[in-house]
Image 1 (tube, helix red, strand yellow):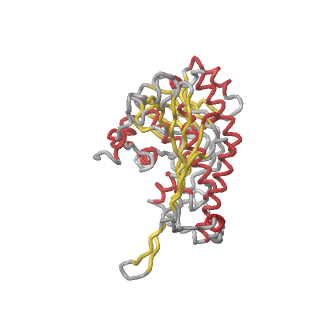
Image 2 (cartoon, helix red, strand yellow):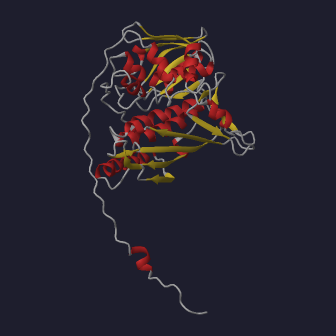
Image 3 (tube, rainbow, N blue to C red):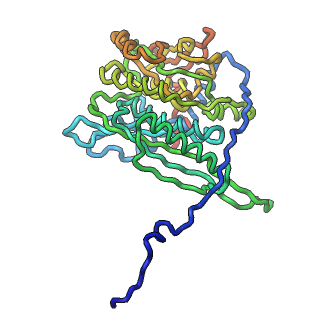
Length: 403
């Protein structure tokens, strides 16, 4: 009836709440390296890695989820004759156009308590590299951040968040991939009591999910992870370091030896990786790559197994040829160093392929075979892994076989 019922000063609305000041503290936790005694054969560990929750098949989810909308999927969640879960997907939203959209992600909460900065860097690099592996380009790529964190009133937890945020800035700027959205979920902690009435507090691992998406100019150039033909050459692109801290291998061995620690969380060299990713884009565009997979969780071992099982073809690999600074077979197989791909190449395109990667660390490490076996020769020339394709496939599917 003409009476004022609400009146607020705009300065108070925007500036009236006092700025909160929180204390952040970060001190890297000392981590003494302790490695298990080297073994002569790692077939058992190779198969066990394939059954781990972060590596194994989750086909039961992909088969139920309605990912096929108006027949627009190009690179599907399940790839190859062996139906293996890939690292990225490609869709073609407008069927009258050859342009596509690539989607992927990176997630390494197991690194967080050791080194939150490198955890965030690895998440960003993996999300980008996965997209590049199927045909994405740094020219047309953006990312999203999704934080799921702990009590930020705790100075140590806030300090971890600050370190992760610093990496989010550094590597998004380095790769030229802007954040177009994101979210955060703080205070993922439980406070209660145990059976004896003693107070307990449980917190989630500091977690950052980085998603990537971009535009592919021609979906006909998109590539899948499965080996295509017996006789194709297998290459590892990128450099391998002794970086097993927080890795699938470390978690696997800790079930037997809780004292095992890989000292280094993978670090990301964006400058070198950009050169490699640009070369990869050009090589894929020139049809020089027959299959490609980004090396992430489980290292070279998991990538090799997935490409073999997806293509239902065997492989022979020699670890001594891998570009690396590693002296043990297990660390070469399972290191989670960032910035790497495993690809197969038609022998007729060998010279052109190698010329395309003149500025990066790459090596011809083996070949695709038709004998349904995966054979890996170790650094010292002895067999490091020897298993049938059927064994690898069975281990990969074992975790969720009955779901």
